[in-house]
Length: 318
Image (cartoon, rainbow, N blue to C red; front, side, top):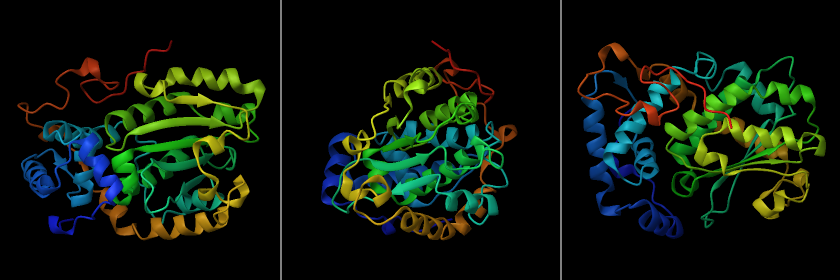
């Protein structure tokens, strides 16, 4: 996938100021930095990567325009996907029946923000809205990862200001808690931290029944250290309004912006518009046999939640 760097999407004035002040973005230099990344990718025999300008720009913003860190993050992006085959597999396609069924079930809600808003992108995960006998938690994560990639490509709030996840635990049962697969949650959280260019600004478990608060608080131990401090748990049904203005929420959440059905129809149309992209991602990846020793991915593997060979190692549990 190639295209001219002159096709870059301009930021709103507010987001541009944040990008300059907080991410070291120099607008006049962005095209040159993207060209440098493309040139580097062309010289990596072990990597088959998307080289779309918005894709590469997301990694530059995610590493505050450090070219070396951006290179490492792109490398990790593809290398670490390989060690989570439960998520990154042949079902990760826009028109896969399972993917579409999960979208229609309303498990994941991408909340649109106003054009002038400079806050983080927002996603609501309705953890109890899917059939536990039909889907595994990894199937839900797969669909979430696809929308995470779409965010990288087209959501400027996500690439500049980061993103926030609301885990709506309304109706949670012991079966739902068990289905969360803490090891998978830990694995994917480490991947999101080390390989995704968008920055995690918070994970908020809301509408948690009092009997489960202790259990959900213990989930913090499965997150990377810096994300651990951004995890909150609440049983207060009003807590969501402290995180998201009512004007952005659908009526089912006490908001004024359409309905959940409206959001799901938009999301299905959006993911289907990425049919070609996700088909192409099946060809992207890392071939360790072709990796050049002079450019190892993990110079300091002790700093990674994944070993030097790319295999996942469990996080230390407090």
